[in-house]
Image 1: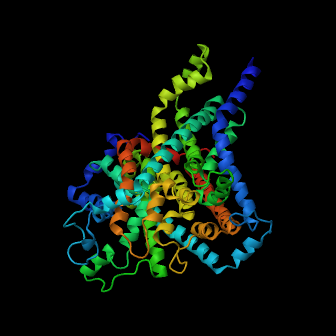
Image 2: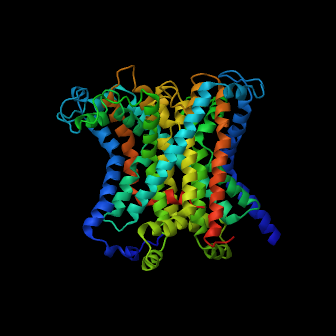
Image 3: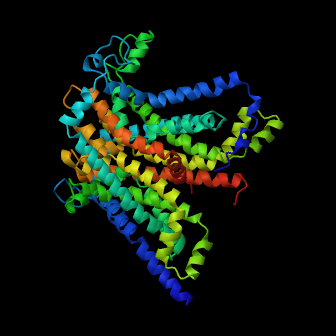
Length: 290
Length: 299
């Protein structure tokens, strides 16, 4: 994967600059424009006063009199702050719990090599392929039976169903790359398996832990169908569900506050992501490698 | 001694597997079984169902809305996956060129994939608004159309609009993962083929594509899997409308089971997706196998 050295330039010098502008930068520019436009539109809409939103005159791409009214409405007249708080709690707890379970499982499968570990590894991969939209109906029944319906626990306990398989799969790849000799040395020196895991394997697998953590965090922040199904009161909703179910009132859509809600809900993940782009990308590409 | 270590190992392995295993069995394996069972019952919300055999499936088979949803799901998956593949591969190849600020481009391009889909779907809903759509505004100013387009009010417009939103969200994933694959291809293949007089198209067809096939197979399996079971985009943008024209299997099963209360019927719809998913996985798995041999890899 790290083969992209300066050699990769290869024969690029044969290509003239104007030609490259047309064949590379122009299409790339179009891609970037299309991929980013909805965010620009989201942001600009959230600062527009209603008169500007509902007029076809003037230039809609710019805002003449920016206003914070939509954000004000969102933060002080709706339960938005609570949804934000719920999303943070659920995402952080679910991510953390899943990581702990995934580290132990990946270490057991990859290094303890107990009998049947191959089959367990394969079933973890298969579990990763089970989509939430197949599971949510029976899960709703289970959540209800356990008395967890309409609580944060319903989400904290169900999110690991997609976080654990993914993180375990990713961490198995990282653990595989740590030389076995290090563990053998430690075993000879009388270290227990637990000490080896905590003192040798984990420090070496920190990039993998960050990748899995970031990825799991964004997955739980973005989760929609479980949160929509297992929770019904406003106080326990997450941001995506709250915005979709409660900010849409009647026939008149308050586009300004809807877009403000979408923007505020997207910023935290974008922020976290911006610090860990490399880890996120390696998590993403690692997740599809067999 | 060795035997003791082996035993120890199994016991320890079991212990380490415990947290993951408990959560996954309780909230993944068991619901999968429960869902299959529910599909054979007439369970409603708040009432345990009775076994009714294949009645749900028989009813759904003759139900015109379910048939429409099946058609929509297949159409949505096929069209969106092809577009995601073509555009994603193109974008990956562009990014693999020697361009300035490559890491910046790569970071920015992934944004549609990392922000909550439900929230970006709301932005699309606004972009597709019948009265204030920015696309219609631009096209009108350019003199291309005279009336605003009703993106979500007409069945085929709505289908294509939701597909566009899905492609928008999926292209970054395909592009970035394929880019990782492209970066492993040694530039010397391109140099050698250029010396032999290969055109850029021939290089793409006979160097890039064969070497990229294994990762394409995996990436597209994931893409098909998540497109086929898509829920958020449709639920937020159209709720399955107009006239059920954009209902997918997942949104229909939600509508029947949760607001509609018919758990059994909803479960039957979601279980009916499984054969299609298995077919997609097997298809790409065997596609991958054949290519391994073609590249002179092990068997």
